Structure formats: C-alpha cells, structure tokens
Length: 133
Image 1 (cartoon, rainbow, N blue to C red):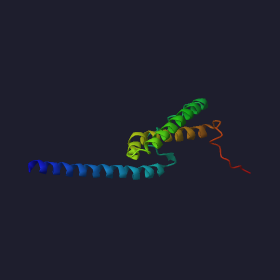
Image 2 (image 1 turned 135 degrees about the vertical axis):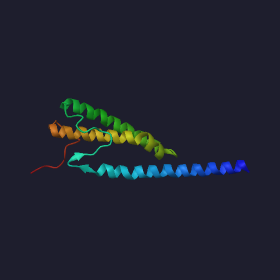
Image 3 (image 1 turned 45 degrees about the vertical axis):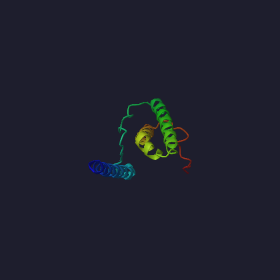
Image 4 (image 1 turned 120 degrees about the vertical axis):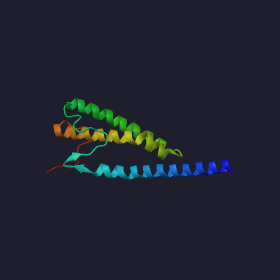
C-alpha cells in the first residue's frame, strides 16, 4: 500500500511539473513576439544584441560581420527545420536553437542599421526595388 501511495504521489508531482513547464514555454512563446514588436524612443529593442556594438566598425568590417551572421542564421534555420521533423523536434528546436537564431537575427538587424547610418555600400539583396521618381 505504501509503495502504491508513493507511486501515485510521484505521478502527481510529475504531472504538476510537466504542466508548469508547458505554461513557462507557452508564456515564452507568447512573450517573444510581443517583445520583438516593442520599441522605445526610436531605438531597437533587443534581447541579445548590444545596441551600438558596431558603431566604430568600418564598412568592410560591417560587411564581413553581416556575411558571418547570415551564414550562422542560415545554419541555425537548417538545424531547426531538421529538428522539427522528429517527434519531439519542435521542443528540441525551441530549447536548443531558437535563442541562438533570435540572437543572430538581432545581430543582423544591428549591423544593417549601422550600415544604413554610415551609408555603407549595401548589398543588392538589401536594396529596395522601388524607384524614386
């Protein structure tokens, strides 16, 4: 009887813990897009990238960094897509790769904003296809 009571207690605790983990993950999934949309006084809100980090970089240094972070972002996206194909893949993708992917995206945003401020020659991929008349 005591063993059965302990097993039932352990099962109840595991169920409570799994519900708690699910709530925390859900809160994170809901909060991340909302946090990404917020901005204060014209400055970009970032969780991982440091604003002004590239202020003293030259245009060639910024271009090298953009190339490096773009490759990292593509690598992480590939890993996330591959992980999503497994049974527990979305959870693994969220835990293992999502934060790094967001960090890479934020670094790229910072780099591109700095490149625009410094009026660096931009890659054709960034340029607008709209003609000003």
